Length: 326
Length: 210
Image (cartoon, rainbow over all chains, first blue to last red; front, side, top):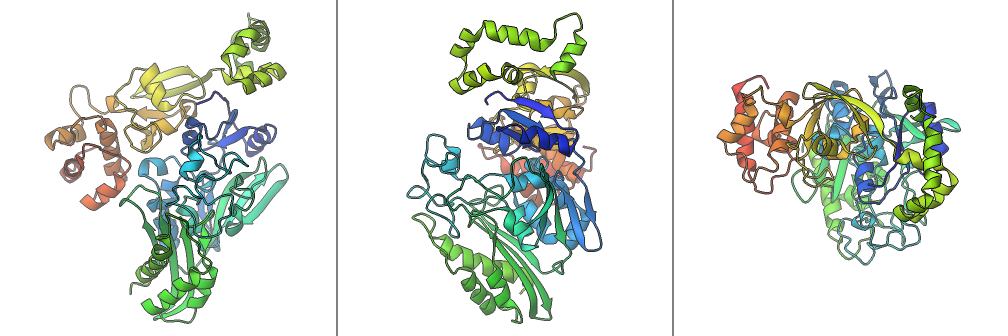
């Protein structure tokens, strides 16, 4: 690892100042992704601002929403009794990610900030527009088995690796940030971005902006939910495809639905059109298959990931069947 | 940080002056030793560059013993334990959080010591494999690993045992399936998984204090 200077921030303002004033300064919370990237030379900050002492760890359930501090640990949120009872999809998604050791270190804010696991991004000997803008994309025309089937560009076909974010986008979460220009709220679906011509930007945060919390509005999805993760081994691997599914049922009729996918795009991929197509339908495999077909419109595969064109709709159907307990 | 040092050393010149003088005198040496971008910046702001190499004070408790340390910021907890404190029971496997050989407990929670910085452990209580036994008496999990032959080469074993103890304490060892899921962050290339699960099950079912 290259040398860097290290400061512990005593307040959000001090943390924001320290990062805003320095071109190559970064916040560090759990560090599970940042330190990995620094060891590989993919990221080389000259200053780390440790934000772990900031009072951003609280998990509070109020009348209309769940408030999760940005520094709450992934393991703490997953095991929280209120989260398990009222937001079980979030708990399931968190437990599908990483290992217990990593969940004990990784924070909610850090999970959102993790970079892609594209092997060309990690390999500094290879071209990568995300790591080094303008250098080209090694994955297009390379080994692209893990890569995107939605929303990619001719600059980048990487996917966002998070499970937690797939549940949060499905549940209409809101991201609270503070920064040099004050506080603002970002709808979760607008937090991460598609690569376009600037794949070096993973999200819509400005320089020096700090995530302080995530809020999830109360919802009826406490029972008929399922987080399906398809991967190369039974546990502790990134998703080939994952699906967050939630149904609000009246008898066997779908009153409302939430669907999102992971492992398929540069951001957690919400399936709004498929959700709408399910409203008023009965919870049958046939209707789930029709919704999956809607979800797959505009999907595009590359040389090694065309299997995802079948795996993704099949995973949507399976997740909906599990959620509906059909 | 430099101010803290200055206050502790009132008889010396303020540290930044000493540092700046040193850097100016040794700029030719620095140019040879450092990569070009850093040299360019060094010419601009000596202070910032010197800070990169400055050790940061940090205190923590390791296996019940208090340590007041001074470490370079880029030192991981794993490297601090192994290289500076000679606690080599904790193993470096992948050094990227993928294998679990470096698992230790920080404030009672299992973590990958390769993916956290030593300077982030201020005030924390660390337990390594060396701190698990009660004197000459092995911890029940250590005994169970021996009884069930829960290893072959043994390199992953300290991490497996630290993880297994935490797995029971967390309440995640209620079935072989649950143990496999919650021990998935510890890779055993010899493939002793079945015996590791048996060892964890026995300790859990034995109801001993872990």
